[in-house]
Image (tube, rainbow, N blue to C red; front, top):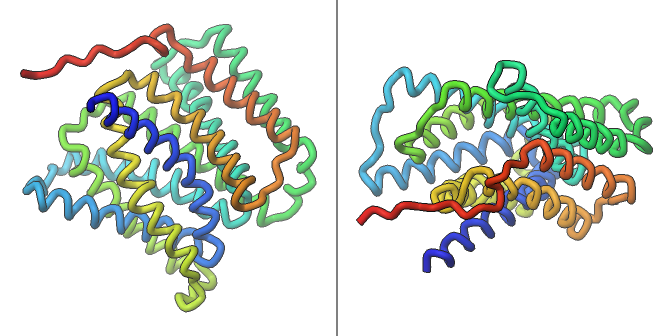
Length: 304
């Protein structure tokens, strides 16, 4: 039964997070990006609140912990998730997922810069592979950057990567231990949702609600229920059974699934150079993050 639960958790994270870029692209077809991001986080916060009230665990977390959660929320949800969502108004979901796959590289470089990790020849080789992959991405499409909307979308993706990396490094540096993940998530989601909705009403030029399609609304709800809640719980359940390094392998699977679904469902063009770029980037990230314990089974002590 335990193996069944772990398998289900891993399957959920791999598939659901692999579909988020696709769902975002569908959602922003008729709904402005900041509305998609804001409503997604706000709905996720409501779900978390219902769970907390049901378990009688809703409480104030203190000003210090609140400060940590707001910083984390700003970097990971408002900047990283929000900018990625807005970027997909102009760039394809496959390109967004592939560029986002470079985020562990930025995390690594930032960690080296502040002394959390050491640089090595292995890391240099991984960086060269990733950089080569990025070159392959824009090999034939460099002229597309002349389009200001497309260029802005790529810039937003780069900002999103920086936000995600900063949030990850922030957590590592402070070694923040979460005693109640659901409670902390509620504060993160509600803060991000409110801020992003303010952005939506301030920066969205056309948000006629009557133009929002059922397909886009359904995709947005899917992102809230499955992308922000279900996958997160599955992710943390997996962390209790296998090592964080092993769980990190899912990031590579997510990218592959996202690219495949973008081609299959959205009919996005996937060229041979794009596939080569994906292989180089995934290989580079894997080499940089590889550790000997990657394929070793984690021993979990069960309490009597």
